[in-house]
Image (cartoon, rainbow over all chains, first blue to last red; front, side, top):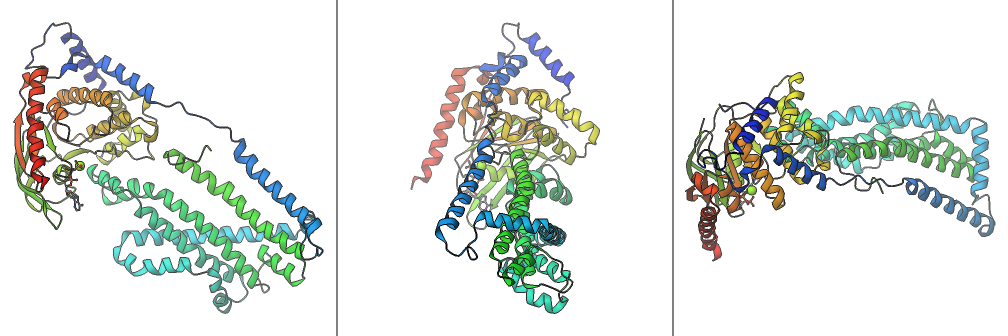
Length: 324
Length: 240
Ligand SMILES: Nc1ncnc2c1ncn2[C@@H]1O[C@H](COP(=O)(O)OP(=O)(O)OP(=O)(O)O)[C@@H](O)[C@H]1O
Ligand SMILES: [Mg+2]
């Protein structure tokens, strides 16, 4: 067995030998067979490498983040102005086509009587809970499918199919099974989000470069180590994309369920608010509810998924658009 | 402790990739394997490393197994250079508290002590390759298999890494099997050069590189010319 790897002392010893050998005019060529560069000491080699490294190290460029915030805000302001102008000058029927100021007033009234806060809180709570449930089922499902070829052949197409099926299709069945209860809402959210999460996990695992697994094998990883230390970390970006889509599906399914299933013991969510606006023919309420649904969706995206994703990709050098 | 390759053949269903390869690589020897692109050099290393089973014949590798250095550095992008090396130590069963010190030594060995906390994408190609070398050395196996480790590097960096590798090899006397399609590199580093033919890959020729050739640029150039000539002949066979 060859000597085990050096310690600092061995390096020092080696450097000393190199220094000692250097002043000698012509070291025995047989004892020290080496190319033209062999005269260089370890020290100068290290120096040379350090110089080269420093030259190749690009200084980190930082960009002002202002454009990332100002640009979307400016766009939003422009769109709102256009909308207001259209409402003022374009439409004779403000009851059908309310402008942003009117919607804002309605939203203020909804906020004042507590309905808006209640609706947002109820929906968000259900969305998060339903998503957590889908996460708890979808992740092990994805793991199971990725681990067993048989299971994957059998269930894979079904899971992919379920991802395409609009989850509204489950609402009537859920109402028949669970009545007008929260169980109906959770069931629909679950059916909407779980396939996305499982599929995201699967595609994350599928896209792990085979090189990484081979590396694991060469490094002597056991099956468990291979999974925990190589495959799962490598699959994380794909999994996160699946989670993001899973959340989007949760939120959509939730709204569908809330719009259709109103009453009973089901609480008052944003979908219910939307449906109420429709029943009372209050267009401003409808628009305010739509905007609130949109705002919650954007807020979750910006506050939860974007930072997670940016951090994850940035650490791997995979976020070319991150600084732009 | 030597690698004994006995009548090794490998095919992927269709035509044979490797055919009847027999050679013995003695302990501490540095063997360079040359061959045209696609002749089966990587396949040979993969079979020796146990990543692929041989179709026929046998490969005897020392009990400790083989460390592998891939053509691209194959550093895990979510780990720092140091953590990449520590992972190799961990999978080898080194206890946690010993890993950090050991990884530090290895980083120092390849002159990367200051870059240990950078992630692979923050390193230059040469630094990545050195981190990969440090990781392969961290596996502490008697055999080191290297698959065109410096092919993607610029000439200056490659030259430096040649010296680096030679220095480390001389200090630690691993058995090294070094795959390349660069004749000068093979002559520069190898004590023995094997030339693989293409389709199927057999050992077409073999040269011993005597110690004095390495210090004699003229002799080195002459031998490089000879081997290049032979390699071209080998490739010309496939012209029609
Ligand atoms: N997994 C595989 N399945 C089928 N054929 C393969 C596989 N791996 C390699 N081959 C074939 O085997 C032959 C040799 O491939 P190999 O990668 O060993 O060549 P190489 O000498 O390393 O080439 P290069 O210098 O380009 O790296 C090629 O023709 C390739 O198509
Ligand atoms: Mg190859």
